[in-house]
Image (cartoon, rainbow, N blue to C red):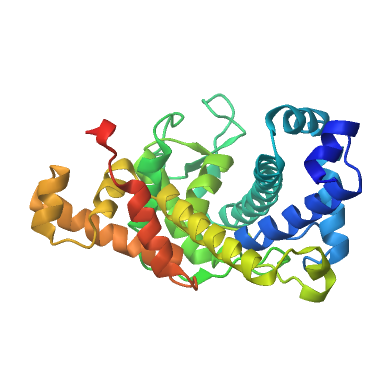
Amino acid sequence: MTAWEELQRDGVFGTEATVELYRCVRAVARASNFPPPDGHPSWTLDAIQETAHDVFADARGPQRLVELAVKAHDDGSFRRLLEQVVRNFLRDRARATTKGRLIRRLREVLNDDPRFAVVPAGQPGAGQNIELADGTTPGVWNGRLNDLVTAAYKVTEVSIVRWRADARRESPVAEATSLAAVCEAVLRAAGASLTIGDLADVIAARFAVSPTPVITPVDDVDPWLPGVDTVDHAQTEAEVLAGAERLLAQLTPRERLVLAYLDEPVRRIADRTGLGKSAAAQIAARVREIAGHVLGAEAHRDDMLSTAQGLAAPRPHDT
């Protein structure tokens, strides 16, 4: 009996469905470099089992189970839906964990820097928002996040530090001077105060914050795998797609449009995008810089860039 048949018959995860869930957690965690759960240094068997049980143990667990049972119509669709459920769960958990750490780090940096202050009582954003102490950022920002990310990328003299999920005193993302410089540039671009959450989102986009690479002892989980070559190929495809999506998430709509034609001469980029040659050249240079930051250390960076270009290319209905 297959995992899907078992779920259809019993309405719960039995042995086959549980093993399939373990496989999905292991494959998705490795493919997208999600950090292991707290208390586990790597994706061991215990970490995989704990995470798998958490997927359906939280408040949304029963809803996820019902959706799987209703939407899946065969073994293949069950597996795809289950992988998406696991990916969404890990993405939400990693986002909350990473952003929380980043917010704490930003508070440490900004509290120690006289250029920044918390908006005082009696003003919009009082007690919550961060402003520049020189009084040049009155009011509360309500613009587009992409504009602030663009301003953050204009600060090029930064010292990047690899993110470590287990870091406590070490500075994640970048050292304090660089973080403060980017925050100042972002606030000046906003012309208004920002919440610490908004600043964290911009910093995360600027420095391509993502979970740390995972390490999975193969001997712990390989008995579940149908074949190493098949799984490795699927994982590589997933890694390439995830990298492409990370790059696209850093780009504005105009930058994505230029990305689609990045391999072509500036004149052709201008013709295809409707931009002036000068603007096309500037945006192309910025896109290459962003791609270098986001994909520079990736093993499949060329494939990721190519995939991102394909995803960014206008479709017939867009023109």
